[in-house]
Length: 296
Length: 159
Image 1 (cartoon, one colour):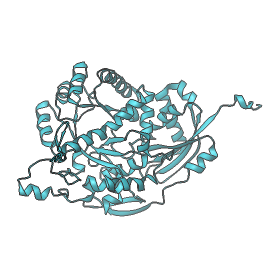
Image 2 (cartoon, rainbow over the protein chains, first blue to last red):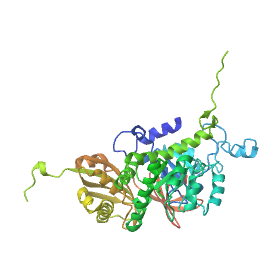
Image 3 (tube, each protein chain N blue to C red):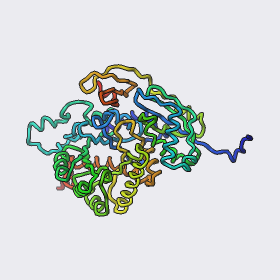
Image 4 (cartoon, rainbow over the protein chains, first blue to last red):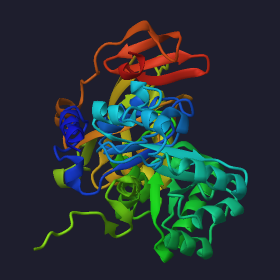
């Protein structure tokens, strides 16, 4: 963490912050999940630069093609895939990313701009069967796995699959959400995404319907205390909004500001959870390999 | 009309706003003011919009970067901030928008938050995605023109 910390200090000088208070001193870490080029209109580097200026602590890149997977933990722990026996796999996973491009390496980007760049994937499948295959494929190589909901079968599949981190945009399209799904999401630790994109970028009837859906979703999710994440779903640096603006806009449509901040922070927690699980010391939740006591 | 006694005058806050667009966009003062009021009207309604005021006191824009001072009634800064965040396009041009800070006087607002145009921009061809493409470079930021429109990149991507 130390190279990142120093980079962050450097970056905080040119931040457009209203107060001199560092974002990390204000409490929760702020993360935003973005769509990067080729899925969006800005590269990961541009998103990272803008997010750093806006006071975010990290970005989660939903576009799989935009970043190389981090197969080896930056702290030098074992590869997440666990195929240590295969020499070919060893050579390709030896610290450097597969393609060797600097602009596709999350660690290099994070160091350059002083924000945590998290590699993620957004699985947009037609039905639960193909979604299940994709989850199996991408779970070992990606830090955050999002599954795009939007119909009842996919929403149901996502909340019942502990390997999925985030159920993205559950209310888009014909999708619905109810108490059964909320309980399953809570039990499986699947975060339900609150997509504020329409709040910022739509007008008229579309926006009204999206806000009505958000309210319904919020009532269900808060009632069962299911985990949640909040995002503006920015597809370019122009669509990014600073954390305080996101919180203010969400508050204007009835969200609790503290709850929204928790939702922005949750992206970082998901990333931290996966990194912890990938680390050498991790055995099972609650069980870590430590130094054993030598007595006698 | 005779001016109001001090205790009846409205109290204002001045919000410094930073604006960013693609380099070939053109954002005018009137268009921006209209977008601001529309955003407020759509988000907090006519009543909330009237409370917040949100009139534009100063506006400067050139080559894809701009800044503005927006007047907001004291006590309605939260709604104003939310409305400003909801400005997603001006005259059909997508805009990135950011509240840089809030002051109690116009002068403090300008001294503290205005006048950081972010350097001059130059036009040159850059290597992006295995092809030479025209781009507008300003500091670290680099807006590349591609077949399907602009792509926001940085010098990190094109080196």
